[in-house]
Amino acid sequence: MKLIRVRDYEDMSRKVANIIGAHIILKPTTVLGLATGTTPIGTYQRLIKGYEDGDLDFSQVRSYNLDEYRGLTHEDPQSYHYFMNDQLFNHVNIDPSNVHVPDGANPDADAACSEYDRMVEEAGYCDLQLLGIGRNGHIGFNEPDEVFSKGTHCVDLTQSTIEANARLFEREEDVPRQAYTMGTQTIMNARLIVMAVTGENKAQALHDMCYGPVTPQCPASILQLHPNVIVVADEAALSLCK
Ligand code: F6R
Image (tube, rainbow, N blue to C red; front, side, top):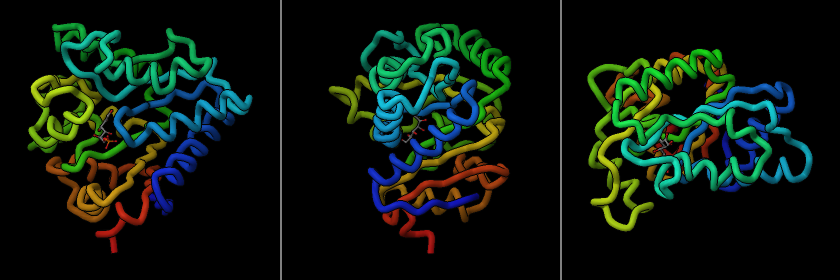
């Protein structure tokens, strides 16, 4: 794992956007794996700026998001698809037909997940996968478990994830209890993984990811086995990594 130490969220956002931007410049047909949540918002703002400044061209980029709540359509303002449109896709020249998010509106979980796996595989998997980490070590919605997941699958969200995500909903009861997520094997198939982490509340998860045993109890720990991971983290997140 390569570690890039940053000062704070702004610094992290700039550096992660520079890594993604450089990748797109070097390979205009980049297949991006993208995440939602608070972590990548600043990165997406910088990517939009890169597009507006004429430095970045998304016209041939394809994107595959990590996850989506089960039961939400892509027009639902709480859906991850809506979030991505709002935070990035509506503001750059990506072709909407090149944007992929698991179909949360498909109640047939097996069909929705196998269709998503087929699409990611057909794209040759991601060139660059952007990840955030949950406080319990989850990546995508791969929660602590007895085994590492493989392909896209339907998960029951843990109480800690429901509570963490409740800030984006009016009431905790409104947070969907299930999601479709790319599996850890699919994430590991990406050629480059960029993990962005800031804040003290992620310090334990980051420590366990880098120095703990490789175990599905901390899904992110599997990244220790990937040959090409860049961790971009601030001092608060690194506070337990002495
Ligand atoms: C979201 C996702 C999640 C988040 C993680 C961190 O697509 O994959 O694993 O990356 O929950 O979320 P934030 O960035 O909100 O702290």
